[in-house]
Image (tube, rainbow, N blue to C red):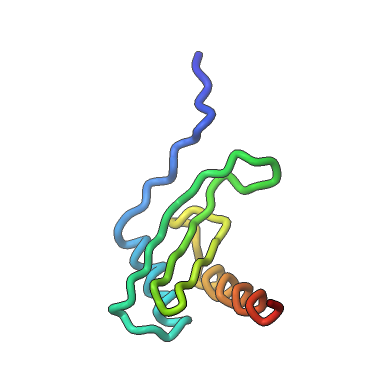
Length: 93
């Protein structure tokens, strides 16, 4: 028996990725030509969720968001919360 210490990333369809991008365009009120990159990352650290999504929004300045869920599990509310959290951190800087 083998043990897989690196679990498989959930399969992500083009529709699921586009749904998250559509929410980002809507909530950030940015042009649909702005590039948005979604990447699923695995975390093996204690207390870290097994999967998170890193989001890069290529505005000026660039925005980087993290949502501690796999892309298929992200909801509109998660997008709103990630953006609100980022804005709150920027105000504290």
